[in-house]
Amino acid sequence: MLRYVWKRLLYGLLVLLGVVTLVFFLFNILPGDPARMMLGQHADQASVDVINRDLGRDRPVAVQYLGYLNDLMPLSLHHNRDSTSFFYLAPDKYRHTTLLRVGTVSLVLKAPYLRRSYQSQRRVSEILGAAFPQTALLAVTAMLFALAAGIALGVLSALHKDTWVDRITLVLSTLGMSLPSFFAAILVAWLFAFVLAEWTGLSMFGNLYSVDDYGEGQYLDLKNLILPALTLGIRPLATLTQLTKNAMLDALSQDYIRTAQAKGLRHRRVVMRHALRNALNPVVTSASGWLASLLAGAVFVEYVFDWKGMGVVIVDALDTYDFPVVMGAILFICVLLVVINLLTDLLYALLDPRVRVA
Image (cartoon, rainbow, N blue to C red; front, side, top):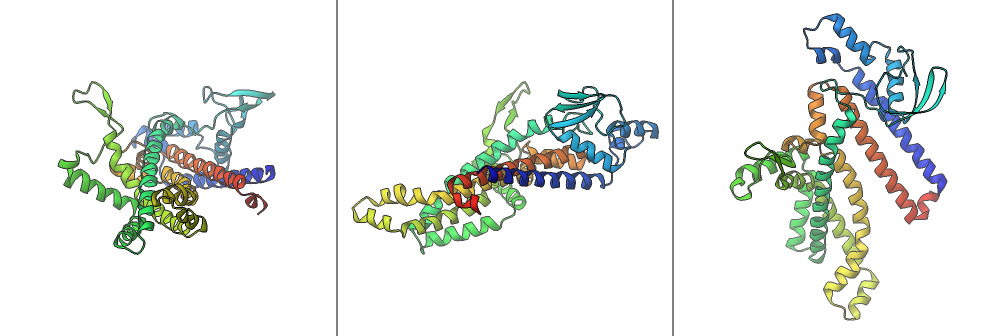
């Protein structure tokens, strides 16, 4: 088991290293001068050179890459005096604990440093830390909606196999799986927040907190969560519906179901206590994978509904060429996906020893 864990950890670290490398070199060959974005297009060249030197962009790309890796790693090497070194520790760059010092070089322990925004000069970690809870709330709400509705529709479709209920469910599921998120967001916003606005009372745009009519404070406005969560949950809902249906049909054909029916148990108890209980394993497994996808794929939905999460942060940063924010967001999402996949793999290994052997 321990060997399997180390193998999966090594695989996850290699994936992250590949993503970091790809992201760094991709954003360093894109056009745009961060110094001129910070100072304005009419800034003099001397000021531009000073900013580029402070950002380390006057060094070779390979040296910049090593410096970026050094900033990301929890264990980092830092030079205490030579500011030309790629691992020079600038004053107040970030909090750290010195573990070992040899001459002018120190080994320090710190949190991964994602650098600062070109536009606001805020730490990227602070920007993402403020945005991620909004995305997490949206993704979890959408997943709970998809899980509850998907299981209900799947059971209903299985119990009424080959009837009009089953056919309508199949059509709606196919449509939901094939509908792009961006188009679905526009369609849902137009239908429920424009055409039916008088009946729904919902708005096309809004955040978790709204400002009161007098502009003196904020209040929790959960109704703004309804439409983005509904839109984001459409695709997993369609998938979970069909998965639940297939699992239920398989469970209902088993011998223990016929035995329970022969004993005279009520039909509802046979379905809920025996068939559904055994059919939920693949559904829960699929839901965990979908949750990771929703956390990473809420960009378009958040942008359409102006939900102040990771999606809006990424789009706004791309619009202003704020590369550290975009790079930090992409790396954060990748780490999240790798961690969730790693935990899923370890759970599989605990539940099924054959996975470890394979």
